[in-house]
Amino acid sequence: MDPVSVLAEVNGSIAPIAFGLATIGSAIGVGLVVGKTIESVARQPELQGRLSGLMFLGIAFTEALAFIAIAVAFIPFP
Image (tube, rainbow, N blue to C red):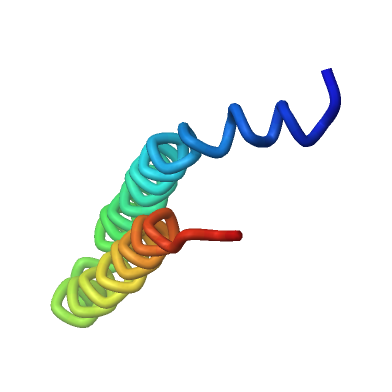
């Protein structure tokens, strides 16, 4: 098979792959952010309030990247 026909067959099923990768990527990112925050609070409990704020900011950025990846999956490429 030539590459053009393979690309034509794959083109219809690329959005679910993007959804899956965006979901897996953001889940890994949020897990790392929360895990490191818990580890930091265990080491320095007096910084819990400040670390929680930074954790929520990191989670927001991670989820924003996932939403961007999902939105890109809807863009029709010629």
